[in-house]
Image (cartoon, rainbow, N blue to C red; front, side):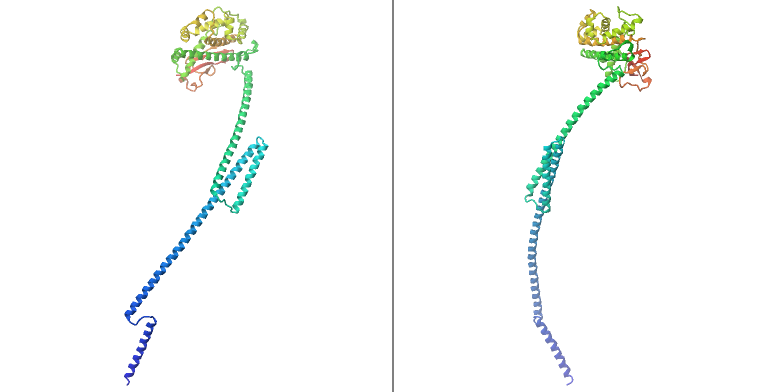
Length: 468
């Protein structure tokens, strides 16, 4: 009896546990069979997967719909930005065009003030006021955000207006510059007139202070000259005139040589051989030296070494030679020769021409010796060549007459070749003469124009300096 009671109690507890387990399984909807339970679980899993898959599909559709809405909104925003930007650019173009118009109108206003133009000032003032009002209207449009509905057309018109305003400004500036140019031209003309007046006054003062200046006719410079007022400056004046005339004759002679086909360099070397010239054109000084040598030959003798010419007594020399000087200084040489062919001046011209112009030279120049024959016969050719020679001869003759009008009379001198240069007695005829070279490297090549002494006054001779 005792052994049966525990077994009964044990079965009852197990039964209760089994029943509770079955109730739990049924409550979960699962069959008690283990295989069925496994199949039920797998089916439930598949259903969950399907449910999850369908949920993802629905979510993708929703996301796609959402993305399409955002893109349309983005396009709309971008389009709005472009419209605003175009409207702002059109506004700025109108603003700058209006500013350019103000600038052009203000330039027109300034232009009308000088010279004063009341109508022009009023018109320009109205234009400036109108453009300022337009600027004020643009400001109000900007503050109220009233943008132009067709910005492209507005911007194009504004650019055209700005270009027109620039052209107007440039035109006004061009007119202003033209007026300034005319003003400067008038100032230049006025200053030129003042310069001419100053130069004329300067020449008058120079003539008073230095009678040796060679501007103007000799008869005017030495007008009212009396023997008692004679001084070395008058002699220097006549000497400068004589030198100028000699250079003119030398120029004519060289042109005749070139026309006749002479070798100028060989001719110069035959006059002064073995001279080193700084420049090839300096060889003209050799011809000037030749002409001066012939024309001043016999200058120190009262009758100029002319035969059958009256020579006064010593105490009468001054008045005699000064009267000759006064007689000839204002006369034209060719007219004087025609009127007085046997005068001392006529004999001087005849002797110097025959000595200076060699027969071969005259023949090569003119193809014959007609001028020489006429001079030998006591006549005077009416040719440009002889007229130039006669003018030169007149000035040398006047210088000779003036030299013997002094007491003591003026003396002539020249320096030998190779002498050392001295600024006291010499003057270089070339501007680029080698004065700065050592003594043994430069010296006098030849004397071009002789020098003179009048009492204690020394008139420098003109020399050509040549490197050793």
